[in-house]
Image (tube, rainbow, N blue to C red; front, side, top):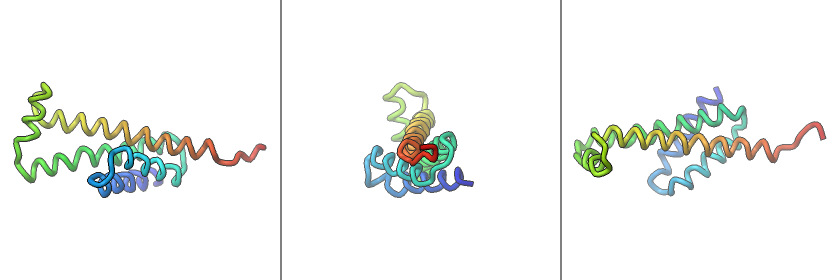
Length: 119
């Protein structure tokens, strides 16, 4: 259940602040969210990764389909790709990896500074 909450909150942070903050600012927010939610490290990674990856995939695709622009295809052609969907997929994979490592960093930072019961 905590993973689902983290996916939703990470996606919400990425969506709401994506136009105002640089990507690294969003990743600091996602690390703070993972630090606050705690839990297993793998769950934090998956929660942050899916949240950011889905936003970085769906927002460009929805914008592209609503506008009917040729710009994504043109940019993909300049970069040597077949079409704009490949470019959107690469963007989503980058968001997945960056969001996951940010959440994992926040989670492990929380585990590093928490008090240990054995001492």
